[in-house]
Image 1: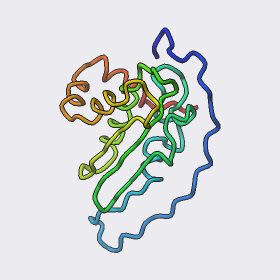
Image 2: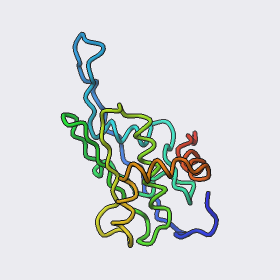
Image 3: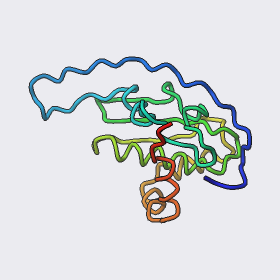
Length: 164
């Protein structure tokens, strides 16, 4: 984690009770694309058995800090589109791009390639919202960030499971 905390005392929230998902019926075609919904994307980001995406500054998950909620995920399966909107814990969060990059990498690794993923900072929640959004949704900037070994290590640390 990072030393010199930007938000030394974040508010920790109870985890929301999970809705039970029913398995979609695809029929007999084992190669048919299974529909993906909001709850499935949330489960990808916050696996049931471990706190999946950790905050880069704190030992808490992004869910516990309410940086991301199920309601902040939009899925249009018909058009293969996912949008995740996150809310940094403070307006001047220096880790907003790292958090967004973690969300993008987790979804890139988990969703079928046909999905276009947009990662956005919630409107009015960050001092440099437009710059962060531009950086997180520019393929070349994301690719360049993922070539930086220090940044990749930080992302991998945030995505590493913690069985707590």
